[in-house]
Length: 366
Ligand code: AOF
Ligand code: ZN
Image (cartoon, rainbow, N blue to C red; front, side):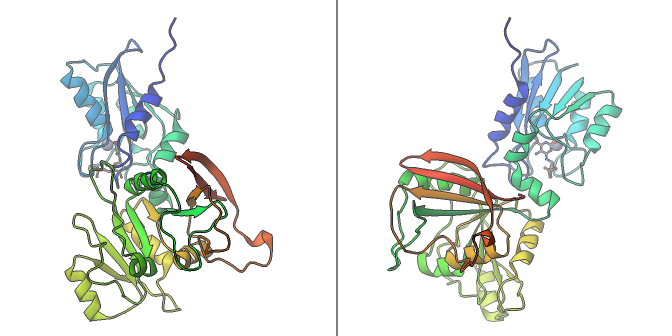
């Protein structure tokens, strides 16, 4: 007797194939299984935004293989959509194809769907089961859930440091504390983000491109700069074609705004009472612009501001097996006067990456 394969795990593996490509759409996978409970008739995952959803891809796959899906079960990692968006409703496509049963990991938090997909399937006589694989499906779409539920992106702050938490020496030397393997891994995390955020300090000091390199990806994340005084140089390397550049500022310089707009940048004026960028309002604005995961690669000051305002959800830290002593740490949050004043995190995962380790740590309550 062979064990029944876990088809939801296979649907999750399909969903993972959309990791770099489906943004800002969620990563969804679908596997269609015959009435015999064993034979996979078709499988698919969400395409690039505007393209087909997972269920439609799986139905097309089954059709291309001349499989009849009458009475079959569709395992899908998110509730099939019920709305007419850039594509037609998946629940109707499943019903029209004769699918008899749907096993879904999670309800879609998108207010345009939110249970209506399940309701429409049940109304058409399709059996619906919800729940298997829920935790993994949610984790894979942590940014999409954040944007739909909280209306702001999931904020992941990346930093590289020595084992004693030093990111730069007192003389400013900071490049290549961690290994090439760690840097390559960092590019994969960039690639899965909707946008990469940095501060004007980093732009002026390092002139970074903040794009994804050394990795096959169909899209580049957008770039976001926190630039209170609108100092971004017009020849900054981050003006890369094929992606958007959002510059948040407190400056009302019309001339500089126009010059940056001429380069294709979107300049957003969101000052706070201190003449700096209102970071909370910026996250809301990024949520409205469809940013699911926001990957922060910034310096000591902006990291500190985001952390002090409790706007960061998790830290992605690469630690090299080196001691660098009393240089600069990853952020400016102190000086604290009591241990209890430091924000609490929980280790989500600790992974070896080449000679370094990668620590993913989440703030309490996220
Ligand atoms: C599904 N299957 O594979 C995905 C879904 O603009 P559209 O038409 O592409 O719709 C985007 C919305 O559809 C998205 O916000 C989310 O609610 C849902 N995503 N639904 O049935 C899929 N990716
Ligand atoms: Zn759909």
